Image (cartoon, rainbow over all chains, first blue to last red; front, side, top):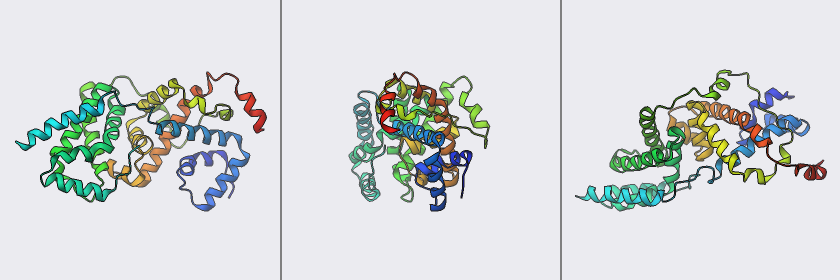
Length: 81
Length: 210
């Protein structure tokens, strides 16, 4: 199986999620070895996902958890009445 | 990311809460505080509104816990409540302006990612930059809703495909397709920012890698 760049782009997500079947995975890998454009796209996408999963990208407001549990405390107390 | 809380442990907690130990609800929801907040934040784009919404979500979950069916994951159920809460608040706030990334989204099947051949010149310190996180949050907000909701659940909150599909009431294939589109839109949007503002450290590394 020989893939051109456009086809490889369609499988970048599947590649990152390790969901490609073996034949396709092999074809994508072979393409990536020789294609600097596609491997750059893959790397940038992967790095965006690393950044996305980083807790510092979406920070919780200071005191969020304390306020949440205080609020729940009062709701739970009411529920006992 | 969501902590991997064993469903059996949760099932036990839920039973005990319903059987008269409501204070255990604190423990039940602790792993999902972030999940609920971020889900709503990416919808309403306002921290105070998101925090309010997160509180309402948890209160609602507490009050309706007896309607939770054990065949779904608790996290999935919670996300569904959070998304409803987010939509309710969105209707109030009414976010203006058209989504710029929508333009990209319309061109289904004819998508070209942005090329950044010198990505490797931008090592880890680029990812440490605050502005890049800010840009990423902006880009996520700009995603059309149907792509954003999938991206938020899968890539920000780390739900798996099946959980995401269940939370959004769609099949796994559609989750995959939309996740891919979302990632590619973000890639295209973010590459110019990845590229800029990194002074010539790259040359040094390139000498070693070429």
